[in-house]
Image (cartoon, one colour):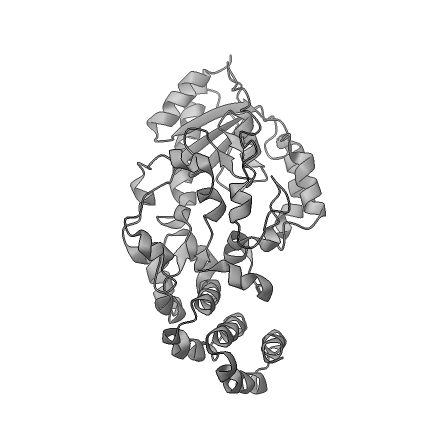
Length: 377
């Protein structure tokens, strides 16, 4: 006997989810476009996306969960207004994407999704096979959400709800259960001739509408890229140190974004929204963990956050940052030393030649030496 889809949605709402849709556990209709994207290398260094086993799972969801019949997709708003808009634009501060202002959404959303899955098991009396995913499984989740009627895919590749914008997290339950009703797919697009999101991107990360080249994306580099960030892109990063909201904020539908009711996602201090760059440049492992514990920033670690702050400092070009950047030339991380050298060059110009020459002469890391040599050249 098929379960009531309406009952599932009522339970999802009672658990605090703002959106819920149910669709059949079929491959994404955009799978072929995804495979072309992989073939062109636009996933950058995210090698896990191209792994054969993950592609096979995307092609056949039963390889994730034998007997998979349905996908329950939920959405949870994270949009919150921050009173001090000037702080976000202040080049002396490092800007953090809005989704990361609060606690780590993986934990908040995951716990609630598991509660929904437990309720499903109880309501069905079948103890069905189920898998819960929050941004972790081999699913093209935005496409599946569109199939579940939760919105359309914008030219910026984001899932956009026409009456809620795009500021919500997505989670899924793959289930062996069947339901008495499945949602109709939402319209594929409602963008029309609008290209505001594409024009707003400072690093030209969209070679064409609906295609994002991660290799040029600020969010990719500040979060997923574990290594060196290309010099030609750095000036476009502005003061972003974790993620980027530019293409989302440019979308006209974003004016309909709903304020979140989830306390865990609310910003409670400016340091969790736009911390002072000086504080990040000076951060030790201990102070970094203390400041960003249980937030999305914690998972990428101190090294990458300081690397990102060096780029933001190079775009700030303030003498205030110079002594801290000089100190970072002696940092234990080659990644930090190299990006600090770039920031010093941007800030001091020819006055940094002696500092950079000294770094080159004592440096043992080949990548740092290459960075410094390119600057001095």
